[in-house]
Length: 401
Image 1 (cartoon, one colour):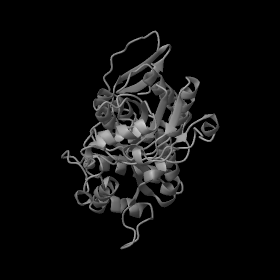
Image 2 (image 1 turned 30 degrees about the vertical axis):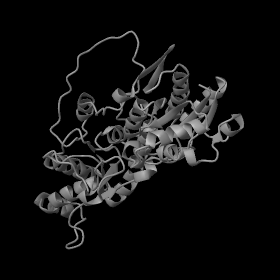
Image 3 (image 1 turned 135 degrees about the vertical axis):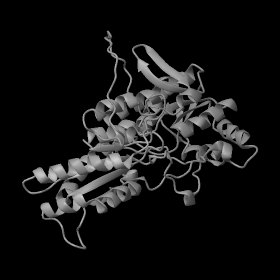
């Protein structure tokens, strides 16, 4: 293993530059050369047409800052299997041979991981540095902590405008069919309700929680001010268990239906219930907010931070994990261990797992939900009492899950 290529793929997020830097620094320390293959799998497919690649020598490594989000190596959403070229694998191998690249460090999520499995089966050595802000892999993934911190910050900040206008704020965030970012971000933002795909939402239950808590806050306020924050994962299901998808938008590059409208759907459900509730009319009159034809019910506003949760700076945790993931991926390549995903370092052990196992979706634990539910957060269902066993251990498990 003399020359290594670095690829980042899928969605951008915090910690990726730490992966790039960690891999490059470890490669250099082990006497290897390290090169950026730009623009994800699109770059890998077109590698044969490149005239040159950027080598991450010590001088170039210094220009890579580990903290900023995004990736020095660039991204694309390309699935190798879906490329309409019967000789695509031969083309990729020819590109690697052209530059003498012996193995690949690839950082990405479940879609990226599925391509790593594909490449490995076709004789292309690669190691997976797990990356997805969705936190839905079996390992921790670079970008999750950074994104959750940003979501929490946005949620907390939005309370100022919510309270000023006496609005219910619905904050919709990424995550597809796993609710980790909405769940953890919502907890950290002191959200009043959190809707996640793992729990089909009963909007009657949500409405009663909104109505009770929101009206209490305003009635108890000496200036009649209050707000209510709902954190919503984009992949939530309605009470019938149906997905909220945009059927007119088609499929993305990996064949997934494009999710759309979760936040708007929640707003509509609440707004309709406010309009048909006579008790809300009396509340608006009692608090001197009622204006016929103009302001008869509380406002429900949707906010979608979108790509703002991907950008900016990385958390310290993601920089630490990212460097370890990148460096460990190089060590695995050096040992000839490929087609695997780095999981974590534990004392003197580098822990990894088969990539096909690592990319299996991990959902939010409903046992974890229950303890927060018991503290008053609404998850769109009747509250469940936590039922735990109690165990003493000699050392805590060193995993971010």
